Length: 361
Image (cartoon, rainbow, N blue to C red; front, side, top):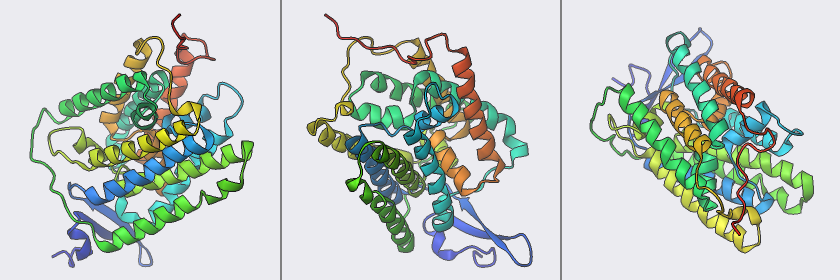
């Protein structure tokens, strides 16, 4: 049956079937059909790659690898252009191009834009507003902020996850179903993913001989590229995987395996950075743990995340992999509009998007 449908039988065991859809007599386009299963091995591999990207950027350049922060610096641009963050965002795009060609099984087909354009744009705008006012997303708060032992990030992370859970629960009519089964990954997928990940990590070796602004710029591009490859390998470029992980209708552990592995890797490398005297590896927690901007922004981000299944980083990777796919483009455009709207309506000083935490006397 699978052969008659044009499906590679080897992919059925992992739950992802590649169907070849004939567009013309001379070309075939691969389309992934996701079958709601948990890819634990790929998630763990992707988590390690993401953790290396976030951890080594802190060790090398003393900076956080925040996906929404990189996009926000390109969209809002409060000060002089942040070359490192721009290259980071560019690295995510390049990662999408690479993953789309070498790891096509990592992606899934998108719903026709005509059917979901309103949800995509609105969800994107809400996400953009949320990451602007909350000053972070799953990478900036969930991985880097928690690894910095930031109390604000420790508040933000469960807040946006709870908001996403509530949103998805409402969208699925409070349905509770069975857990998505765990499946084995074909060896050739592991082999290809391992080679791509190793090449991305090795691309950072020239940083050993770099200093100053050149090092900062290169580390931004390398970190974005490596982070994006990790997102693709780990399954975060499939919105359905995220939706299932954050709701009980068809609980999928892929996101949680990736997140915990990435967090453990990032946390360990941040402790190495802290031991080497990198100040940004641990934030001093003086002042309020949270304020209305942090909590409100985190709630908005969670709602948008639950509506679309995407946060900024995976969206950019998807756009890089399929530049002419309408749904991810519309969602990313919504995110950028939301960020710009946030900057135009923010009553705070444009120079200080977050309150300065001062040590109590």
